[in-house]
Image (cartoon, rainbow, N blue to C red):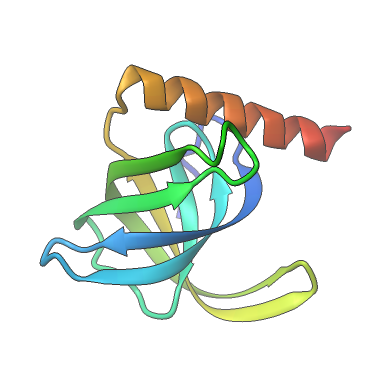
Amino acid sequence: MQERRHKPRAAVDLNCTIQLQDGSEIAAKLIDLNCTGCGVLTSSPLPVASHVKLHFSLSGYRNAHALNLAATVIHNFNAVVIQGGNRQTGYIVGIDFAPLPETDETILCAYVAQQLDKTHN
């Protein structure tokens, strides 16, 4: 698969909920993030091209600003992820965000920039 990202993603470790098209919800772990999309770790794959809603809070940032973002699943693959010394197996699901409201985009991009600065300093 060819890499389509134009902006780097910040490594994160945030709990999130993914609302599927049928209204059901699954718990997931947000593992990387930029202003236009993210990677999440799930226990099962999600249908590619399906429209979902992603719910998460930016812990430790602006009073844990909550985001509820419309998005599209772009890929899935089996993976083993090691974060904070913990090994997790599952599926990494690539997600592209739909156009964001300006306020959410500003906050999200500032949060991503802050996380990238932490990893480069």
